[in-house]
Image (cartoon, rainbow, N blue to C red; front, side, top):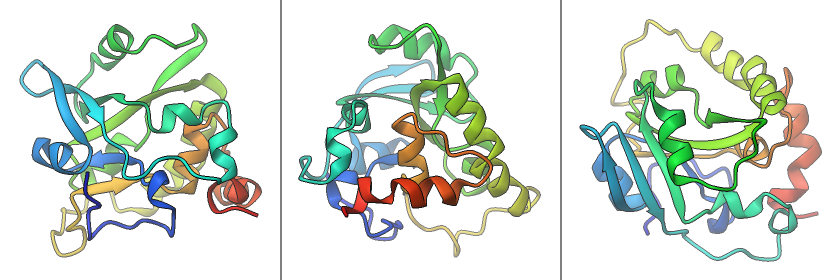
Length: 192
């Protein structure tokens, strides 16, 4: 797969460039992987993810959930699609009963930035609530939710996970002060 040249990569190694938002179906096919199954009228996709690079020596790859970052089977849904839990459970098997299905990128935020599709991943209830009270709330509050999408501001087709998103995907609580979690787990993504 290719790296979206306009997207922010946060200085992460290519193995950690994990897409969480996509402008359209073509963006998914170009930058994420092949679409194996289309659900409904392009409301959801089962995507065969093709990582940009294999795992390396970074500490993140020894984390128990690291395989979920680059899981070859990913579920991507339209930000307005409501039946996402059923679809996810039909295609992903290693989920606990206590897990919730999370839109890694906040749907309201994604819509305002012009992303039609977001990736799903299961996380614990505590992590989901923590993220909702933390970085997601801050992002939505600090972004004028009445703004129109300005194509001059957000030209990239893909949104890659930042260290806070990656922490959430690893089931690490990011809390009300998301940058504290990033500081405390920075070594996972960048080394010591």
